[in-house]
Image 1: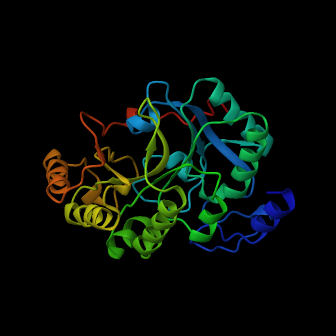
Image 2 (image 1 turned 180 degrees about the vertical axis):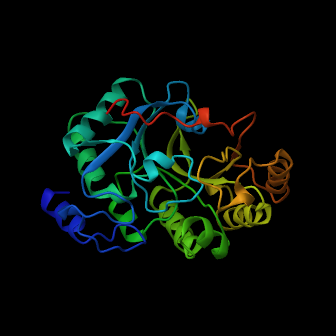
Length: 304
């Protein structure tokens, strides 16, 4: 992808389903809260992903600032709101990929990447010319535009999207996108078509495939069951489902008292039992105490 094409795409940005048509190249910020300038808040080995992503060495995560979803309960609020991060060049991003590979990363893990897809592609091209050989993980909130995902064909090996809600009412209330399920389900279909069924190496590390995450919100157990049922009925064992219990109520949730609390363990246990009862086998669950702020990495420009 050349610089001219990147400029054109950023001048009238429609990379995400918000379709802002904002001139990000001219310095304006879209719904994602970012211009076309690459802003990265952290680049480091990360051990808190699914076992087949992190492994023992860690996943080479690159946390991009900004987000096209903007959930009110966001666990990564400082970066999602564009409140932190360092502006870098495409060339520097390519260097970061290579540095993470040199540190022993199992993969390059792109976190909230949607609004930077053209720059990410160019950086991957540059890095591959210089010896990047790791699988690339596209780690996103699920609210993705199919047309943008198609640009990533051949660049992304592993898709790691969320499927947050089935209910349009809940999606509207907490993420301002009533069309979330419609958009995210189409996006996951495209992802699955691109990378196929899961493929692992001899060490059990995922080399290609799709893992769909669902983080259960307190008070919305039935919607969570609906999400799990949809994924299993649609994809069976051709994807992995990661059922997460790490919901952490942070600041700014006074307007939403119903979710300004941790997830009851009984709700999570019931959701796992439900998943097992309908035949989910390819899945991940979380054990122990994950609803802690310490579970969230420091967005302090490490590695940037």
